Structures are given as C-alpha cells and as structure tokens.
Length: 475
Image 1 (cartoon, rainbow, N blue to C red):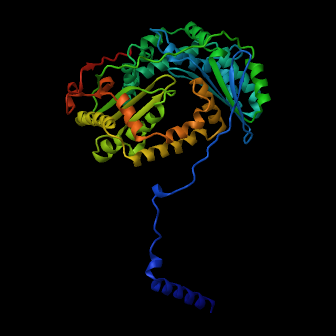
Image 2 (image 1 turned 45 degrees about the vertical axis):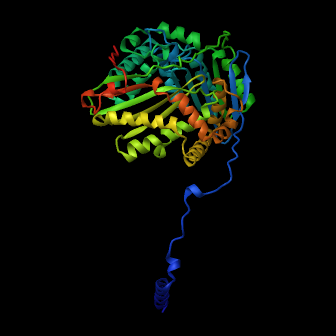
Image 3 (image 1 turned 180 degrees about the vertical axis):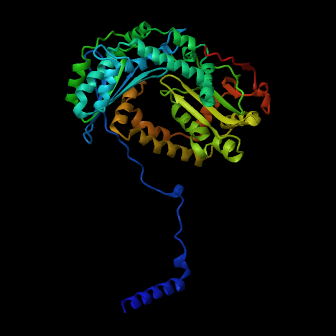
C-alpha cells in the first residue's frame, strides 16, 4: 500500500513538470559581471610600528597572535650593482654562503641540522640592488632561531668547502644558461639595456672562478651593517618582546655611519637591434626602454598604460592581437619594473622563426598606437578597477603588511603612498595615458633583442634599424 502511494505521488510530480508553464522552465537571466554594482572597498591595513635601535637599525613591528609564528624580513641596500669589475657574481655568492657557510658559533652543517629539528626556515637572496634575509619560526623556538639568524647576518665565516661548492654550482648554471631560451634572452637583454652601467655586468665562468673567501668577507663587512639594513618583525610577539630580542642579538652590531647610494642608470637610450644567434625553431623578442620611477607622478598613469598594453592578461592589446587574433605567439605581453629612482618598460613575445619580423612589427605598432590616440574609456575603467582590486592582495598577511610599509622607507616613498595608491590609480585619465605614452614610448629610445636563427626569419632585422650581432661568451 505504501509503495502504491509513492508511485502515485511520483506520477503526479512528473505530470506537473510536463504541463508546467514554459516560463517556469526557462532559466533565470544572468547578469554580466561587468554590470554588477557594489560599494567601494574601504581598505585600511593596520600600521606597523617603526622603531630605530641605538645602532641605527630600523625595525617595523606588527603584532598578530592568531598563530604561534614569528616572521622576520631583513633587507640590505647592496647587491650585484656593487660587484667589483672582473668579479661579477660576488654579491650572489656572498648571500648564498652567508646561509650555508657557517658562523663563528656553528658550522653550516650544524646550523642546517638545528634549523631542521626546530622547523625554522632561514633564506638569503641577493638581487641587483638589494639582499634579503627571511626568517620564520614557531614562537617556542624563537630564541634559538633569532640567535642563529643574527649570527648569519653578522658573523658568517664563509667556509672554503661551501664556497667551492657554490662556485661549482654557479659555473654549471652558467654553462647551461642557454638551454632555457627565455631565461637566456632576458639575461642578455639586461646586459644590453644597461650597457656601460654596473647593472649590465653579469657573472661569467672567469669572474666566478676569481672570487675568493676574502672577497666575500670584505663584501660582507662593508655592506652588512645596521645603518644600511632594515627589518620587519611580525607575528605572535609583542613590541616589548621583539625589542628585547633584537637588542639582545643585534644591539652590539656596530654602526659605521654609512648609507650606500645606488644611482639610476642614464635614462637616455639609443635605439638599436641586438641579434643573439641561437639555432632553435622559435624566436624570443624583447624590447625595452626606461620608464617612470616609483616616486614620479607618471608612475600611476604608466601602471595603467602597462596593464592595458600587455601585463593585463587576456584583454591586453598585445595578447589580444598577437596571440588571440593572429595566433602568432604562445607567450606575449609587457612588463613594468619600477624602482626607487628609475623604471624599465618592455614588451616580449615568443614566436616561430618564420613570423619573427611580423611579431616585432606588431609589438612596435601596438606601442605606437598608444602614442597616437587615447584608449577607450571602458578599457581604462576596467584596467583601473583590476589594478585596484588586485592591490589589496598585497596585504593578505601581517608579514606582507609590515614588509610593504618597510619598503616605502627603503624606496624613499611618502608614508601615505599606500593609503593613496588606489585613489591615485582611480584618478588616471585617458588623456594622461596618451601623455605618458607619447613621452616614454619613444621608438628612438628603445632597445630590441631578438634571439633565434636569422636564416629562418621572415624579414631581415636590418629593416628595423641598426643591427649588432652579440657574441656571448660566459667564459
């Protein structure tokens, strides 16, 4: 009886669905995401507290007791820019062996074992204009961790065996650098972009081989000083605890009254095409010119310009035209590297050899169009919205928040720079984009590097300007 009732109910439901009005069967209309309206984001990240120790060490402290973790981020104004001529790679090796080469208290192997047993992470990385040290530890192991961290920062011994191992690894990397076509092309692009400047001097087999333990010791003693270094400490630690810990382990770090300066490169470039021979079926094209610094008024409109031209992903002009519309490249876009006192803008594409000339022509024409007519209001609005929406993800953790605020001072930017960032992006107009495009996207001041096999190119590189063939010798 019960089963008969179930069948009767099911039959009734099926009949209702069949004879239901067709309007009920139609799906509800969907609203385009572009038409959605919502209140403006009111984004105000917490402020880290700035403290200066007696020895000149600048520290940013931000408490967060959600997890029993403490993070420290240290940045020193040094890097490959200061490598002596003929010993390029010194800053990079100094950073690596600071971490692996032991300290006056422990060998490198003993430090590795201790850090592993306590789940503490310490990393050191040298870039062109800075060297960073990262530290992360559970609160329970903080005392021992900061002791090791301070010794790595202040008293590395650069053990000979660790130095030789690092040199061997670096030289093997240099021998294999050309195996990665994209990495190889961008490396040589930096060399020609910064020609005549310390930034354009890159490590070679010979320069790495010349580096000695004494070189590392002298480089470290000169640059790693408290008045040339800044730190951010965040996590499950109070201000008083942080200061007590830092004073205990870094308070006797002697200041020298020196602050290193890194001047910008000469901002005038002579247009040239550099050909980097490589017998491969694809070409890598990279163009570059100098652009606004972070502290320049043109930074905000140029950020929007770069997004529209190539760094904005699928909707950017370069991606749309070269890859989506014409299918000429498996990777294409632009990049904008803004520094404290200069910036670099570039475009790039990877394409088959037989379309090299066509793609290079398109890259140039897309940049030229940005100088001739304003962008559509709708795409400018979308670019500004996208940039501002992604901006908040730079502050997803207390560590990122304190680091961002530390970097304001490191880059000598105004204290309210982050607070006004979204407003400054939001105020960018189409007229400003046209103005900065005309000022910075000057084909007469653009360096172009093409890596590939010119015998397979669809167009001679000489049709794009004076060509210089590069002879790369990592020896």
